[in-house]
Length: 321
Image 1 (cartoon, rainbow, N blue to C red):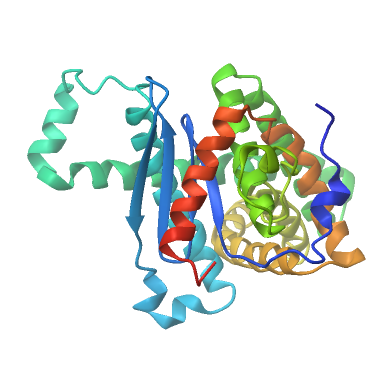
Image 2 (cartoon, rainbow, N blue to C red):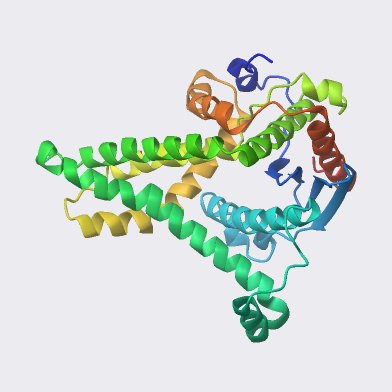
């Protein structure tokens, strides 16, 4: 099948505005509305298991968390926690994890300490480790590598932000490409494509059938892949104004400013998804190009799975979608 045309994903004229998002999981797709998500997973016997879960946004309890920029940080953290949980659950449903395996001594010790809360403790621990690795790989490593360019820049410390930014983007692109070489990840990328196609079909107000969904683009302006790339570019711009040739101070500033950068990037991707002009398209274009790697053309079974998840959200939240 021919590569999807980026101009189709850029053009949002006449497209229904919706806040429905999604995520590819192991052998399935999760679709998320405003207050619930639905996950459809293909089981070993080829039937589809549907999981629905109601969510209560933390911003309902603490309105300050709905403020611009702040809401981006909150959304990012909530997505990480939810994402880890549903990927683990989807692997169990798809039969990719041996649930009958005897717990290790370490797991037994954790269960003794935390009891019924053990799974949540492990989940949050994994999220913390994932964030730490991401900050180390994409924020701190470029600072260390950029230090070697200091003698070439002289007093132009502002240029370190550009050098680090280019190194950060190069590391990110290399990471995405290397991950894409895995056969297991290839199937996840196909489900990612099915998720985007289904959302595009709904937003273009077409009936959600396998045939209709198949004809839509697998690229989408609000994709998390585009968000991460915008984070890289935003980091470059912000760090241009944080000028110091002291490595420790640069390292600290990169960690401290991560929430601000994530929040600003969230606002940009949210704004880009609602608008259609030359400037917005220029911002969105690199992320859509990257999605050609992080998505793949799904088969009909994958599309059917994504439609199942989407229909469950639409049934639960018909007015808010």
